[in-house]
Length: 233
Ligand code: IYR
Image 1 (spheres, helix red, strand yellow):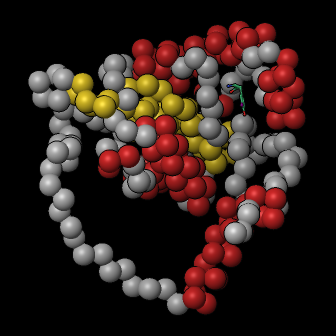
Image 2 (cartoon, protein in one colour; image 1 turned 60 degrees about the horizontal axis):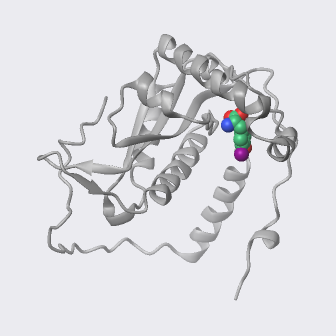
């Protein structure tokens, strides 16, 4: 399961190789219907913090990761690694380390303004989702790649690329019927240690995946309306 950056052949330095791209054009009526349906489905997605321990079909999670890995990336360098953590002992280790950091954060490191911003979400330093959810996807950014000679080569637009991939991952999980949460314990260095990731990788987020607990609650939040987020010129 752990990708070896050495085995991947980057296209860096290769000549442009065009291939035809002729997807069938969708009729506008079909487009409108699909867009409206997708908008409604996506509006049902909520960040879930109370998970059922029920197992999820693992292939659904793998397919969602495969969807995420279709994301566009800077220079097509695909600078991501998705570590799928199922082992309960490893999830317990991650929770213990995350809660240690989060306790310091909620105990003052975040500052009053940040804590006030978080109050409506009802979050605190206790991260039961890390052990309740049956799987965690820990996303790593590959800040650079290592050539066969061990030389470091820069990756471009890594934050943007991995951010887009994670957005696609959350969408794929939701549309496949699974709940998720983007959790960013800070600092996240412990994840590299616990998961034994190489030094070119930096943790980006932990995404618990599962089904909502039977008594799951979410904060009663309102989304901005379309006219509050769109500007047409
Ligand atoms: N990382 C902390 C704090 C936190 C920060 C933001 I910004 C959030 O939107 C939610 C939480 C935590 O996971 O609790």
